[in-house]
Length: 276
Image (cartoon, rainbow, N blue to C red; front, side, top):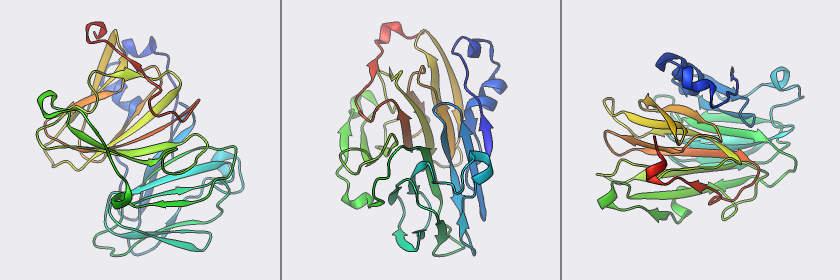
């Protein structure tokens, strides 16, 4: 597990492109037979990819987190962006088709990830945050989620928002997680953009071909920067940063949030004339 530290917004004004990428971009999440995780000190979110092949994988972070087992004081969100697989929680097995999700409450001792076919492995994307209470484990099927429809083709941001871990779907302590799909011809995920000082966010961009690139914008509204991402890469978005991006084609992204509250629309909109 790699550790990333928090930064003051004034500090990143001095960053080169390489320094910005080193601190906020995670380039490798999914590698066959491996677990790749990042621990960010921004609200202590852990995120990353679990890609089992012939052998089930688990997450062991006892020493790193000072606990007896990974979820002793944490909750966990999972969305599978690869082939079919299973997640087994303390002996209970959940089938995980492509883009199915799972919420795992605090206190689960054994979590095993497996693929149905090693040649087409599951790719389990995870978000984990500290938790103060144990809520029930809940399986979330994409087909059962009624998406929120937002944007329009004329403004290049026609999209469907699927809420997985959200008060409308299941209870959690502070973790929110969902998936947004942009329609063909749309490339902006949020514009006009916003901030939410009370919650940080991590984005995973995927469903892109080899040549597609996302331009992820960050920074305070009056001092913006950008990162260029390719398929299946993730970016840390601190609470003081704007949340928006565009790309050379349509794409899908998973958003994970944590912080002071679980109110999805708790955001501060930024007027276009205030962007710099």
